[in-house]
Length: 120
Image (tube, rainbow, N blue to C red; front, side, top):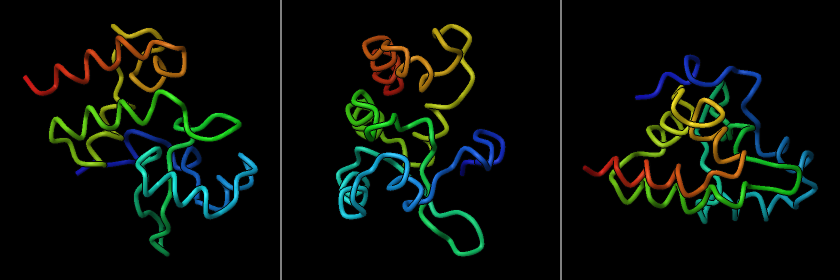
């Protein structure tokens, strides 16, 4: 299991209402992003609210490169928690220092290549 306090600081998690406010999307749209796995989240805090790493979003919604990357990692048998951890784990060989930072910098192909290697 992921110890999200080690991987992502508490202030870098967004609750669903925070995502609505940040992106201007409707609540139903944010819920659809989660259901369609355009975003991943986990239940956190005393009320076990669904929360999403802020790094998964830009101003308009989910990073466009995130959904396919989630699919590749999921197809390789990683759980949602493991996917969140893998995307945020330090990797100095990637531009940006982690897979999610590299995705944000536009390096989708390299990140997905490495995600595919997880199966082997």
